[in-house]
Image 1 (cartoon, rainbow over the protein chains, first blue to last red):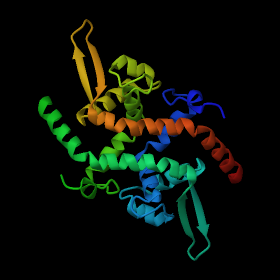
Image 2: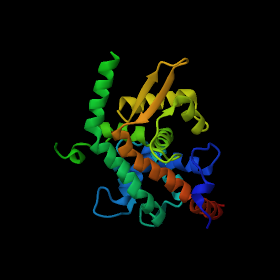
Image 3: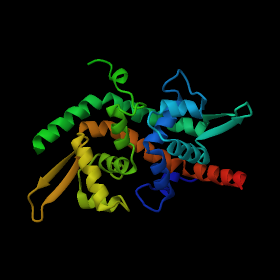
Image 4: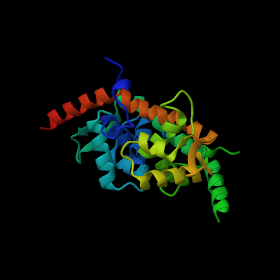
Length: 130
Length: 130
């Protein structure tokens, strides 16, 4: 394989990696990867649709379904249907999804960890502006 | 400082870290951090508005201005106005912005590096679906 970093450049609008970056830098995609990657458990885990919907507070059914489908199509997760009554649908990260998870976990942890500093910065900024 | 990870949880809709995660997981914010963080140069660099607009191909003036303002308010970058004729406006990452840059650079590199694999996954997926 040739050097893919030279071939693809997300700074360019027409590059496919721009659209892929758009897909993976999206709060719902990030939170789905965090959930399946094991941020709330000891290790990566398969989760049912209903479990994801409950964990990602505020996500609409349409947005969750769309994001899961896109991540499945890109090969970041697998969707498994088990013929129980009613059927059980579970989602699990692939190796590719797991390779992205350490970055999405980092984003979530960064946001949570630096929240107090950002809140202080906003107050200072708004005080200067007024 | 107490454990901020326990205090903030981006899985919760009402948590401020959810909104912060939304702001930083956004392709324009990611690409601005990549640009100022030095992905296209040897080291972090100050850049003029016009340079950013040129590098981030396809970004609208409105979106670029909005994203820069939000990142400035959060304390991720500084905006400096130099009274030249016409005035020069430059943007530069703060230490906080630099601490996020290694994650946004990782996202961009991940997208560029895994693009061939994702394209193959999409083809396979669409072939199965049809």
